[in-house]
Image 1 (cartoon, rainbow, N blue to C red):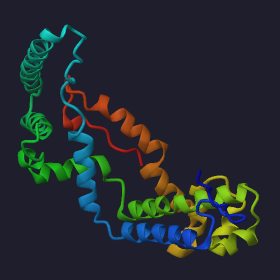
Image 2 (cartoon, helix red, strand yellow):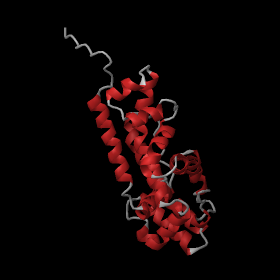
Image 3 (cartoon, rainbow, N blue to C red):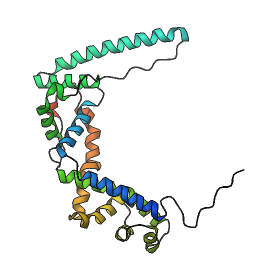
Length: 249
């Protein structure tokens, strides 16, 4: 029977100096990477994800349990019916579009789903940029940089606040390897997001509310609500890309 080694007093996950220092360096690297993002490229990537990665067709129906001898034939028939249904649906969707751009949008969505080509190969790079501007035009480079900087430090402050709530006082947390200013910021915070904003503010030369606002706009409830509403706004029944919603900034 193996005997497990006893832990040293006070030793926990991320509870010693080397591991906390490593977490600090990971978060710092993520923050630095966020400052180098190209906003135009990022907006195009987000636009393609939101517009063209949502399934265009209904999924293949689940095969009911049938006798083994009939299973292959049943699956083959269902696949054929599903493929035929896709052809019917794409024709219906194209007929519903009254403008050339709307039809190109449907074709780009379809061919992207079928992994034939990228959307911009059909609608063109200029149209894709216009869509990106419509969807994300209100967000600036600083918004993304500030939001990603806050996001980068959430694991660090989440761990710090958890250790503080476990009964460790400030001096002990500093001895464990936490940044002293981070400790003093976090001791009266419940949220790692607000702690990260307060700690980052003097480092980035902005005020804490500006960081919190940027994070909320990119990753907060308003943005998540937009994403949640987006599929219905992208419904092909009478809708075209011209009527897609914009973020309420």
